[in-house]
Length: 291
Image 1 (tube, rainbow, N blue to C red):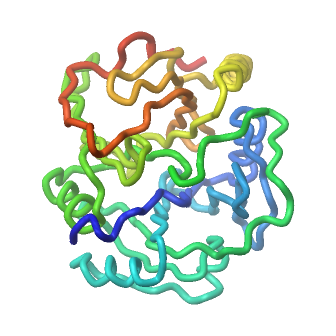
Image 2 (cartoon, rainbow, N blue to C red; image 1 turned 30 degrees about the vertical axis):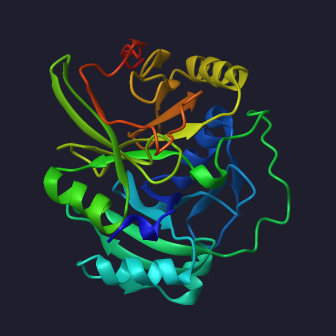
């Protein structure tokens, strides 16, 4: 599949957690998202004008449930589905509507990570998004909700899947030794955001972390203060060498991490060149011992 199917964006994320209420409270109090009621045991989290970007399902896995990739239109979605070379299932209309979508086609990538291609429901949330914590809002729009670092224990197959079939481009790699861990990550983009998915693995779960970007440095600093008070920091503040994001990581009640970032660079396809970096941080991002 050629780049003609672009642009995509990472439109939503589904999570499976054992206690959706506790997770939603954490997301509101620390991350500054807004919880909205939905039917059943799930919770939904807003971060912009969409009805929601994160859906929190009741489940014992405490991990990623699915990544939702937004296609530009029906023709793009159909072309992608025809190219995927894996089993796909179009979800019923009511399931699609629960995602804030008009059509949803589910699949599983070569490493076993569930994904969904969707066309957005143009009906947005009736109320403007106002976060009592993140005064400047989150960076979403055409860049999507952020990024996810997911398992890829079949790296070649995963890169071909997301690159050749879904049309993502390789931004760069980080290959190094960090503490007692061998790091080998491929960062792939589908719009001006430096990366929408990072292929990292093998890792025990489907997802190591997801990233949410705030629009102002002050919002990042205030979020860091809230995380310190809540004793949920996984790292100190730091800056990555590739996307230049200033960020920190928190431990969620479900066990996986969420990165809160500010100031990530935007990629210009006409001038970008792929690089391999030998470190995960220019400075900071030091581990914080669990309390």
